[in-house]
Amino acid sequence: MVGSGAVSLPGDHLARNVRPEGVLVKVEGLDQALDLTGILEARVYRAPGWTFGPFRRGADRAGFVLARGESRDDALERAGRAMKRIRFSTAEVAPQFPLESRR
Figure 1: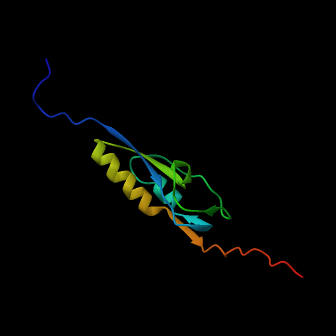
Figure 2: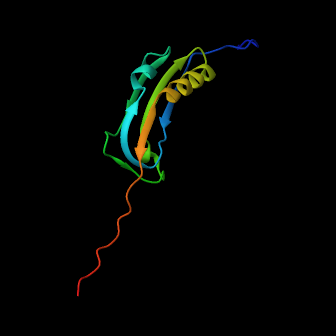
């Protein structure tokens, strides 16, 4: 029989990074995010020079943070704190115009 008392179970949370559109110039704060309590893993999928377009599907994410906490809410808060440390600097993409045909 299950007791009526509330039980707090440890929790994990996987948060995925959403980034601004543009050409990735640099990523900062990944090491600082990894140093936070409860952060098990954090990765960025793309290197500088990668062009991020509109966010349309899961594969368009820039990376992830995996956090563990005393509860699911604790893990969620830790992941959020880590994601705030990771900063994506992007530059605008220059518009591409078709070449005019020469006559």
